[in-house]
Amino acid sequence: MRRADVRTAMGLYFIMGTPNVHNQEPLAVLEAALRGGITCFQLREKGENALQGDALLGFAKKCQALCRLYRVPFIINDDVDLALALNVDGVHVGQDDEQAALVRKRIGPDKWLGVSTHNLDEMKLAEAIGADYVGIGPVYPTATKLDASVVVGPELIGEMRSAFPDMPIVGIGGISLANLIPALHAGADGVAVISAIASAENPQEAAKSFSKEITLILNK
Image 1 (cartoon, rainbow, N blue to C red):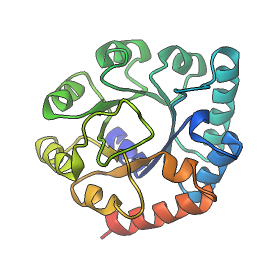
Image 2 (image 1 turned 45 degrees about the vertical axis):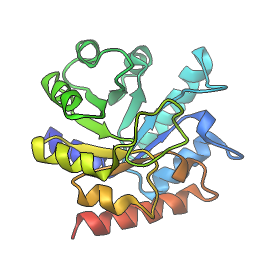
Image 3 (image 1 turned 60 degrees about the vertical axis):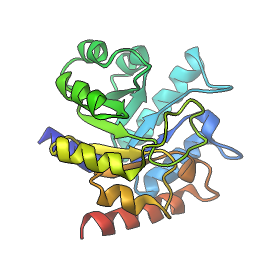
Image 4 (image 1 turned 30 degrees about the vertical axis):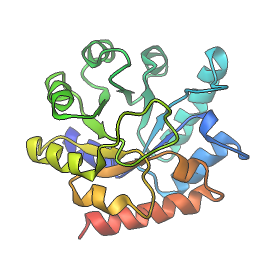
């Protein structure tokens, strides 16, 4: 049941921090995305001018309240202390963040744990330490994450799906309406989007368009 819930949440996975939003209010962007149909939200507050300390705590609380209102899982990227302080739904870590096995010990068995993976060895390790889902990417070139790994393409998603048929998978990196179909056809349960929603003139309509397209493809 848990993996089924996670798989459903991977459909349209929105990732955002205040540095990703331009000319709009970040909380307004998040609420618009929630109205548009995102199925999971990850707060990734990194980069230049990222919030810290009490400002980050206050912003995260407001994000959490919005996600609860719309009944969407709220995930924190990397910051385990913040995740524990707010009792969020889960934590996502990359390969360069705190080791996933240690994060699992800290957050306990009931919280969701997501892990970024870029090859089969990392996927095996994620499975072994009890990850609830993996992010595979970057599927396409991306300007959002300056230290992103080498582009893996939809092909790696297909390899991962064949090797780990039960693991919930979300494709990430450079995903747009124009290129999401190959990632889903390769076996992803959904896609993670940052700038295509966070930087959109109308985030609600952007999210709605993604949601409609993803639903059509996954329900075929």
